[in-house]
Image 1 (cartoon, helix red, strand yellow):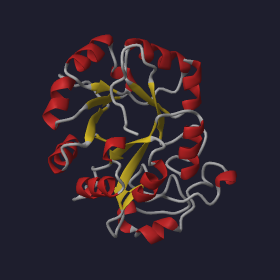
Image 2 (cartoon, rainbow, N blue to C red; image 1 turned 90 degrees about the vertical axis):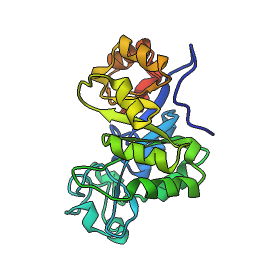
Image 3 (tube, rainbow, N blue to C red; image 1 turned 120 degrees about the vertical axis):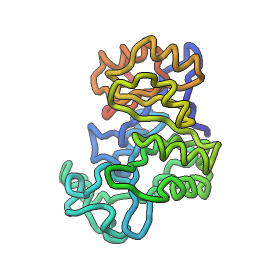
Image 4 (cartoon, rainbow, N blue to C red; image 1 turned 60 degrees about the horizontal axis):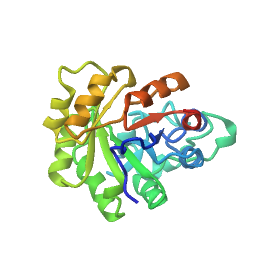
Length: 247
């Protein structure tokens, strides 16, 4: 299967589970990703950092404090050390034993099942080589056509395109850009991925005219999902993928 960025006219919205089904399970865990698939998503979104030993791992924050029973920076722990942490109990005791995943594990799980949107975390802590390592994994698991790389660091997206022109990329942003289309084009990106509050009909129209997909994050209520769908965005990432059935 390939990850579709632009939905066809009159086609249904492309459904993305933000960190899996974060509103119902501990984010970026296998339990969360499995639940998102059960809820009917076509893709799951996740976040990647580099461990002390250079492994690409799934976690949102630069530290493990919020989403595990551990303490400290991801960059200061090896994959083996990260694997010892409980990534589920903080959310609910019934998720005890969920572990931090390596990106390779997610790609094996996702192959021919669901698309993957991979947010590269590269700042304020920077990870030299993270784009190359991520692309190497996508190639090794034959997942280039099933994934998109997204980031607030537009330089790392441009780097990714230079390494692998076939990989899809999308610029994340959480403020008003003077010219979002130009920003995407400068990064060589394929998609605009703004916070949902910055979506307007004019933005969707201008992006589509330039051949760019529009994929906002992270509305978590039904009225907003319906409004964005009516504006013609291509996909939406939400913490509550079960809401898609009610659009």
